[in-house]
Amino acid sequence: MGSSPDSAAIAHFDAARSRVLGEVAEACRRAGRDPDDVTLVAVSKTVDVPRLEAAVAAGLTVLGENRVQEAESKAPFLAGVRWHLVGPLQSNKARRAIELFDVIESVDSAELGRRLDRMAAELGQVALSVYLQVNVDRDEAKSGFLPERLEADLSALAELPNLRLLGLMTVGRLAGTPEEARPTFVRLRELSERLRGSVPTLGAGLSMGMTDDYTVAVEEGATVIRVGRALFGPRPG
Image 1 (cartoon, rainbow, N blue to C red):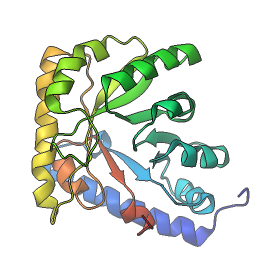
Image 2: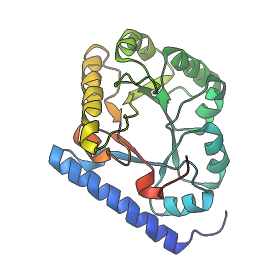
Image 3: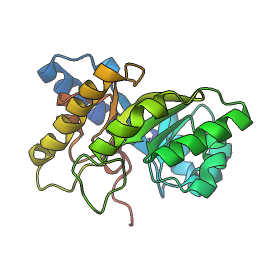
């Protein structure tokens, strides 16, 4: 940490980034979309700082972490990075998350939204950028609003003065093929369209798609993809 990143490592990450962005561009072409409308979040959990220095030098400057504590240990060593929290947020970590992250993608209850709004005001963060996590597949193992719960709570969340609702996020179910994940992404997009018809201050962002299925997610309207393994390789856990 503190020395220049290894040139071979930079080249490796540059090639990996180019592969992913090339596939995004192809998916956008099929869907009639602009690739510039898709943000690549490089999910960097368990990746150490020296490798991340090389990744950042290769242009992977939006990093996603699952845990507040892990981001806290890395952020001081990585300049020019935008941090997304993509994992569940415990209430007792909310204040530190606001201080560390540019975007919190995992607001999964009205209670957490109110807590973040209150703490953002205390910290002078008057436009905290968040996504509302939705369990569109009704998977008991996943966190997130059920669609009907979000529909009931959204007007109140939209009135919280210190939150900026960028859009919706979902964690897809494990599927055998990318095509099997498509219904999840369709449901999130359709839910977003319906909700924005009644609450227009909800942003149009859709954070969906990971290494195994991000091209399908892009075809269905993803504006943020959260990719780890295709960039950093397999990791424990």
